[in-house]
Length: 476
Ligand code: UDP
Image (cartoon, rainbow, N blue to C red; front, top):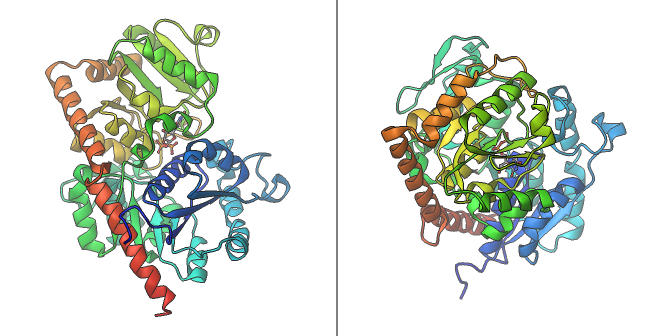
């Protein structure tokens, strides 16, 4: 008899969009499927495969990581070696990058026709890869969309499109009330960052056989119910997917561990519980040089321990460059093992840009947040964190910034210090905030454990694919 974790007859094809915030959760989904005994093919490009390999290799017997060539710089017009969205020097390269991702369709089809013993039973594709439809069509497999948003943001954006409200939205400071939400949600036109991709995301979801969401029901059930009712769509909420892997594999998440990463954990080991503020703006976000200098001043003035991950050192004070590691501070240039850091007992607060993965990773670790949104749907996530869940405080950013942190004013030292104080201490309200996020962290871990809501949803997803794959095999 077939056991609950014996699904080697099922073959999932995973097509992640090439950006850290999209590839990492998709590689976590690959691990979740492999842990259920399903076989997985994850297609990406050579440089991205090299980054994903370390955390996938413990599951290598079931996960096949396939690197397919990315168009060379001479064809794509992108800088040499630029295979990931977060490696783009500026947003000007965005259209060229999206065009380059389309070039993966033909080699993907060739690979699947020639090399795969069993055709895909299901295609799980990022909403930003519209060509995945052709792959699913050729193999007559159900296509499920993964786009990496919170359910709250998904429902806000769905409602704005479905109620035709987007066409009336400009890019100013006027406030928009999001229609169809279970409670009032107001946001400025600019913060919605309406661009042409939003419609693509919506379309990818509407035409798919179902949607996979990295969240957990206990966190967002109110919005999930409204979305299900409004769309009648199959939705599987299976997260937090960052908890899927064995904790020892999370050190390598996003790249092979370098001495830098081991030093991070070693430095944390020597700090008191909950005494460290972790600061990161994700894989793309950067602050302007004057804002970097102001944040440095605020962190120093707080007198607290902090670990700050920096992608671009512009504006960093001289002493931070000359002496990145001291008793009080650790400045990490480049990549840090974020999931492992957040779950370390020494971390007591997280200054985050509110990218959904980072937000959920903070929640899963039970760490209260200082919300510092920059762009994309991060202002909507800030609302969820501060106004709905009450597990974080605003630093007070109102304007959407560019990739290099340009176009917004500087958040001053007083506002930053106030937010830090509230999150790391904050009196009675601070204690309640910490208690709430700790409870949510417990619920998150329970959700992915055997019998938890996300675990059960993953079982349902596998059952759905089993049934629908057979229907398609029969040619009906
Ligand atoms: N991340 C990491 N180390 C870094 C920067 C980012 O491990 O130095 C991971 C982080 O844990 C998260 C993802 O990269 O899983 C970033 O996704 P998110 O949605 O938070 O933000 P984005 O980078 O897409 O803006």
